[in-house]
Amino acid sequence: MSRNCGCGGSSHSHSHSHPGKSCPPMQVCDTAKTHDHFCTATVTTTAGGTTEVIQIIGDVTVNTNVEADICLPSSAHDIKNITKNVYLTQCKAIPVPPTSGSSTTSANLYIEGYVHKNIQYSEGCDGYVKDYSVNVPFKCYQLVTGLRPIFFRGFSQKSSQVQEIREIAEDGMGSDRCSFGSRHFEFFNEPVECRLLNHTINEFEFPHSFDRWSNFEKLTEKITINFTVRLTQLQRT
Image 1 (cartoon, one colour):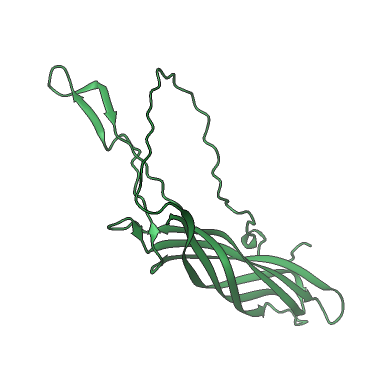
Image 2: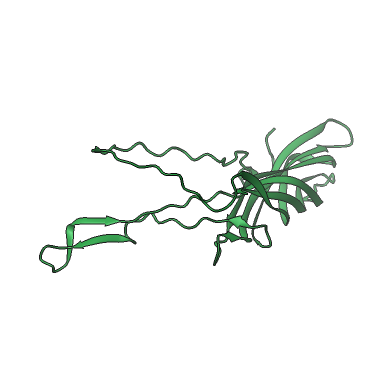
């Protein structure tokens, strides 16, 4: 069904794809030639328990308000029914690094999603009921405090420009440009996972742009979306 109004189709489209958890593989590079290989292996005893379990960090209730303009593909005489579903396309919690210790109770929450709406309407006093589906996007970026402890192992250092190892040159007048090294390290932190638990939508519809037969093609919606997301992290107990 083609649209016959000037709202513009591209401005109301929204991607259904989810960014996903997988990262694309790295580009294949050359392989260096290595010489003799020597290694040792020892068992390291770390502090904490002996079991890894998924801990609930917190259930966070989010409230966001959205105003959207919707352009119907044809003139409507009456709205018969509107069904709605909430989908999240992004839900990422980034812990705030602790100032001391190995855990934090705060995280920056980045949420994006859309309300998928199916609008059923009639074009006159008699005739068929038509369907029109549209996505209403929303975003919410907010600092969340008061969570249960989020375990944070530490930062990483992968640049060779920070902790360099230099040797004195043979003439003792500076560093040896033909001999140098560096110290790198990485700590791998368990990510905070996020999933949608429930949602509630309250909205008002305001038809406008009426023609001489009291039909309309445009709606302005004012929507309040309340939803709860659960944050979890794999921790040692």
